[in-house]
Image (cartoon, rainbow, N blue to C red; front, side, top):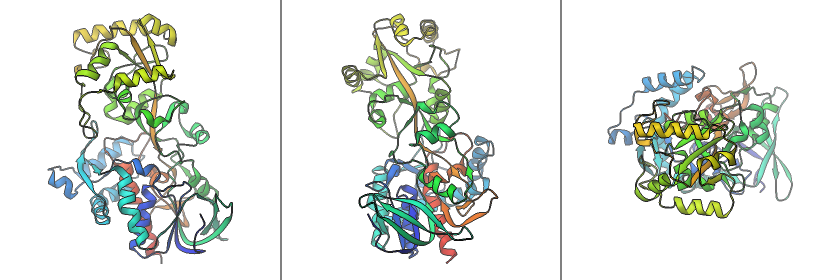
Length: 482
């Protein structure tokens, strides 16, 4: 799709949550704005976001939730080993409640505030996920005020003058193959990182990138980072993915087919026995309560399998689960679990291995330590105390009744976080720490400032909330420069 004009105040590359926030803020400020989306539809991975971070919001006050911004800031400093940018985190915390109110004024509806696993009550949950927030509120608001959206188009180059100031973009329309030159007073990169670029992931991720299972829109190929690097931006904060624990690893079907389904919940979120490539246990499986921690534990192994017997499957499917699925679900049992296992067997899906005995399962998967591991595990279950890894007793289920099942796990990931260094105004910086005039980065492209080596859902919604925050900050700075 070709743009209607040749000149704009602002070009936004990417129409996910951060791009939509920037577009809505630009609309409210009267900027002539063009949003360029390479996909056929808008929203990107933002369509699947559950909610955004904030503290001090009206919703939290109504629910009696009090969280200290100072304490949270100190926690994030410690969690990131002081790699996170203290001043940006402080700015973000101070503006977070205002961002929620701003979204509500745009028409975004919220269900309330919740936590995730062992995290804080900072997660302001959307009704209808990010898809509602974007397509029922933010994008209509922007379009009504003149923001132009084009799809199936990609920016191929950032235009610069002799002083390396950004002056516009070249855009290719996929249908016509035509290249358009667009002049712009400012450009915002909101392209979502590089999770779907396997070459970049292998190059920059610290280990076992082949076992990462992308759980996003599939369009985050590092385009924005490449454009910025070619324009002189510093490569910064690479190698960090937002991991959320175990995920069924099956290459023959789309990864989302198992996300939050009964078979995924049973193997990844009910803390069954996990073993590695030789059949040894390696962690307290209830580590899934902080998804990023579970991801770290799993990715360090060469392979990981969740081991369940028929009795445990029957218990999960017919009786009750060892923990609540709230706030994401009200269900108390996995009534589709058995059917999903049968379907996986019928389709010969590679993630599932079944055997009548533990010995046969060990042989099929070449797990020499599995029999000894299960014997020891059953002893711990019988004693009611996990003396090896201290897993809470409510998750202790023996592995005795055949048939026995092994579910291969990878690590689910939603996005990469980083690639570009930005300042408090979300201006992109070069190797000397100086801004590249008129170039801004927001959302995942810029969010290395929030983290160290791990994204912690101890503060649920902080990446999504940063998409809103950074989009607004960049536009406010652009307006101030007019």
